[in-house]
Length: 188
Length: 188
Image 1 (cartoon, rainbow over the protein chains, first blue to last red):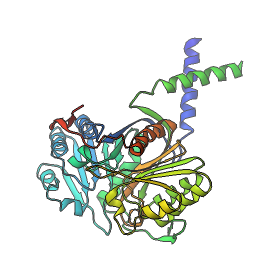
Image 2 (image 1 turned 90 degrees about the vertical axis):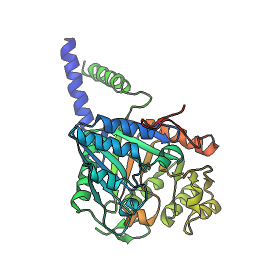
Image 3 (image 1 turned 120 degrees about the vertical axis):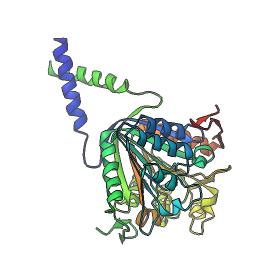
Image 4 (image 1 turned 60 degrees about the vertical axis):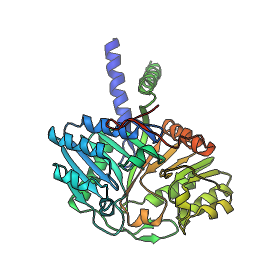
């Protein structure tokens, strides 16, 4: 009797949780929030890269961290596909790791277009998303006020993966226009 | 019998969901992810500000959006407490809305310290968090590549609220140091 009841509860719980899913509203399993400089944002990102088994995708404005670039290269050496999408302006920074990554097996592409590629997100094994205000720099880790949010959810990962593919294939929208400046409604 | 069973299922579901909560791992209800310029990030933020009933807290590096600043002022007029924590450098920008907000009832404080106040988050009614790479500017909405994540969760909101209070009270850590540069481990 108990096991039948447990089974029933499990089934109903699953139905209940699935019913929350819609195009925009994605229930997620768990979230970790970290703030710089008080929390170890850089260490958390490093630890997650070090667990990658299959793929890492990074879309980031500024990438100057030696430790994180080495972690990506180590991931490539153990068979992980690593792709990094960077802003052009960000790579003009003298400490940019763009060339170092490219020379060491990391696939790198630079954003084209008018505005900045201002994202700061990372996707690991299509399961984990790290996003927030945090560029991969020492300043972001030690002196700036920043936040990252680490989300363990295949559903959330899927949304970021789709956008990353748009960046990688060059099929992303470069510029939008308002149809109404007062409501910030865009022309479709 | 059915209502007793339903009640039992509800109680067990609640226990089950609570068991996932830990200091770092917060289960959340729902998430919306938007990318600029393709999605209406600015409109989504505007719509959320317009629903605020009690409080809005914003910690943002660059705030030049006329529409969003007006929405905050309108919120103040309907009795909402609005606090905005800005970066000093960001307010030197000619289009910064710092003065306009202050003159119209929005509580504004500027970050002190060595690094940038580089966050871009907003908290509404202690229930909803908007965070990501998106500064409140027209460039972020129309030409940059950005992402925002909107999380409807009191647990997540609580974490951001605590950090916002540290900013507001001036009790936040200004600078951190590494104990080990190779693991990005910080001195505690």
